[in-house]
Image (cartoon, one colour):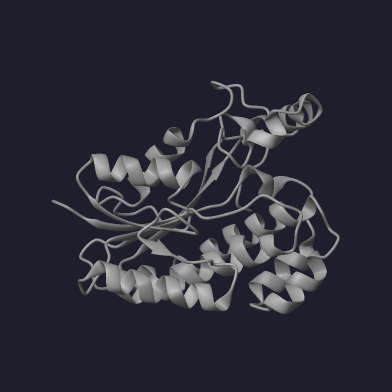
Length: 257
C-alpha cells in the first residue's frame, strides 16, 4: 500500500521508540511526539500540551490526513499526574487527531493498556476518568499510590471498548485497539526490576511463562500489525501481549466480560 504516515507518542523511549524505529525501518513516515527528542514537543499532562500536540502534528504532517496514530506515551507512578498522562492525555491525543485519521483510506489507531488493569484498582478513579472529569479523578487519586496506574489503564481499556464501534470510529472506518503488555524492559520498569525485593513482587504479580520479560520491539510488532492495512476487521480489542500472564492468572475467565 506504499508509504503511510504515522504519529507515535512517547517516541523518545521504550515501546514508543521501538515502534517508531520499526515503522521507519519499513519505509513509513513517522511523526514522533514526546517531551524531548521528537518532531513535536508536547506535554500531554496538561490541556495546553494536548493542544500543542494536535497543532504540532497538523503542521508536521503537511498533508490533509494521517494513516495511523499510536498513543504510546505513559508513565508508571502513584502520583495523580498519572491520571492526566495515561488517560486524559491519551484520549485527547486520539480524539484530537481522529479528524485527520478519518481522511485516510485505511485509518488505524492503537494505544497501550496494561496487564495491570486486572490488578487491584480504585474504581472511583476509573469512573471519574470515564465521566471525563479530570479534576475529580485527580482528587480521588491523591494518596492512592500503586492503585493509580492500573486504574488509569483499566479506564483506557474501557474507553477503547466503548468508543471503537461508534460512528466516530468504526463508522469512519478507523480501527481502534489497545495492547496490554506484561512486564516490558524499558526505562520505566528498570527501577523496579533493579531492586530484588520489587522484582520478586513483580514476578509474582505478573508471571510470564512464555519467554519471560518482553522487549519493547516485541510489543512494537503487535502495534505495527494493529495499525497496518492488513488489520481490516479487528477493532475494540484489548490484546494481551504478556507472555501468558493473563492466562496464568485468569485461566478460567475471558476479558473483557
